[in-house]
Image (cartoon, rainbow, N blue to C red):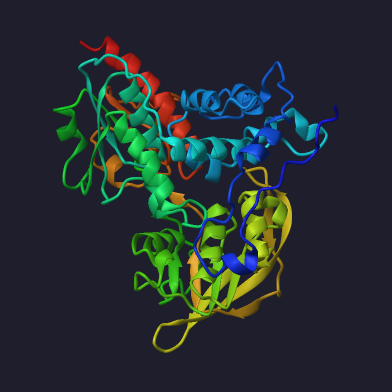
Length: 461
């Protein structure tokens, strides 16, 4: 029987409806559709899709179980490698990772691996999450700094290995970027809370409102714990460095999305929050965070929402799905365009941005063609809100307060591939080590570090 060349369609909210609410956009597969999608898998002997998965999930095996209707077995296989499947199934850039390696891409669309992972996670959550067997206690105590994807993954794996794990979180809810950075319509808070509850059921303790580097130091923690994993992420925003960037109305994407999530603006009018948005919003950048900003602005009442990006669509780092959703929702794209100056009124309130047209030159260090200004092509766009989403640097607080810790030129903690730093007992992973990257890469770093820490702890007397 011929293999279907396209994925089974994902049901989702219509664009005109969803820009008026913060409900999740895709509804997810039902069981029948998931089984049919799973049957598209060729069950390749060399399993290329696994090579594209940072957390090493046995993808063909869980898909095989779905195809055979063994959903509970599929969940069991999935959960042997990942602690946050409902998150990965929603925000993982699978099209460039596991699905990017799928053999079916040679004749059509890859198997919808991400959609199937989400299906399994949602199925288990509705049925009731099972806690796996925990190894016998090792008597070792481990501290994890930061309850983001890297920290939660590391903590969960270490707990399953039999270690006593305590997570120190600066804010009042766990999740890091999952809770405070990604919008509700892409990753609902109830999903994050359910995933964190699973980590807690593994025996992980989470302590809140503790700012490591301020209220307590790493050295003080190490007096009580055998090892520490630092997963504090990339919370330092990067700026355009153009005139007028200090005007009222110019925000970093980090600040904007955190305000929306922390102040529950997504639940307006139930929560009357102080998050305000202008009528004409421009987001600078074209990654997933930029798409989140542009799409959130429409939901908060913006009449126009622009993406301003200095390269072409081909070079956009955002997921194809996020770009597609943004276009559907009415986001206006100004490509090959770069800001050169913000201007405001006599009260210092943003009124417009001056831009210049760009053309693509030779490739830069990233492999993408370098944007070059076109002389004399300047033009102005009226805006009253600017959101700068051009990336973030590692959070500097913890690295700067650990004496002797080796720090890279970008403020990142230097580690080997397994998260070991130059100081024994201190491990690190995720954005704090690599700079801003994806949730799944942070999870992969947490998983590798957990293995290395387990080995280290078992050798430690």
